[in-house]
Image (cartoon, rainbow, N blue to C red; front, side):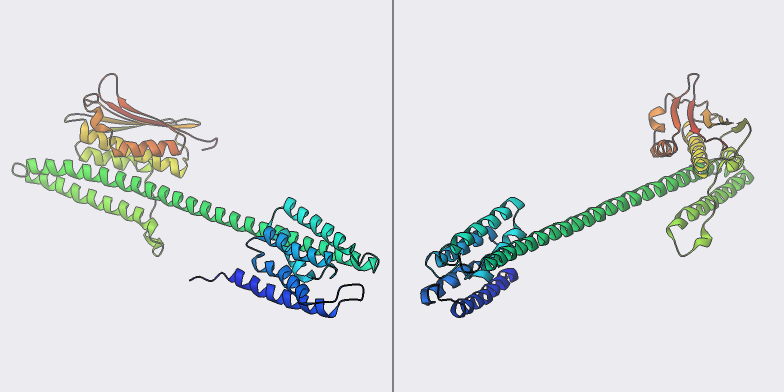
Length: 380
């Protein structure tokens, strides 16, 4: 069974307050007041008893304590006989209830004290009554200050919790974006090189018996392509390994296009590279995105354009734009649905990331085209 520590502490406080008030009731009476007796002592104890539930029901406890105190004043025992208990209850209402309720309790306390004083102590000592009223106001103010401070601390905790949740959400989003980026890179590398290796392996199998030298060249090309794939994958996966920075290498870019075109030629896709305009420095992100687009476009043509198809890679450098295009003369319309794979979806994400415009689809004269235009800032 769980024990409510707040209730236990308040019960102990009620016992202490009752003991103090009974002692003051017995030894502080004057000739103008009724002599202390058992009934008066019981009323004093009853006036302090509600302190035991001051935090659970502060307003009810305050009202319950006000009744015995008023009876003590009316019956001639004097006002303020449960002073300590009454102050605790006033403080509790101010600390645990709203401003309107707290102000009502303060006003009711002053009215009750003033009414009780009129039954025998009105002419005794006006300064004493003023001190009591100032003490009540001070205790009430302390309760309000406690409430405001607690509300401020609760707001700080709530704000810290919201910031922590926002930070966790940002972290999850960053991790998801990083996983997506790595997935795109791995797909582009694996899909391209495996497609090239598959075509070369098929060619080697066809000429293995009739032309062993040509088959041997195809196998060598497969080995070289596999090594390139492993190197690029090692560079990509290296970003996940913080303990081996030496394994990180530069990402491919537009300067690597001649080697990519040559690789596609060796794989059996006649490819031509055309450069228009004066080459200028390109941001690293755009450089990689454009290279991956061309790589995916050529891989797409190698897999779907069909035998005898040719591909053309066009790179046009403008003042504020980089235009890249991959075209082939294969049956683009017939295989359009088959060409819209995960690689082209990844290309859409890459181009959109850098504010580019992407168009993918069959050409009017036959074949298939993948084209993107990347905006560049001045001086790039």
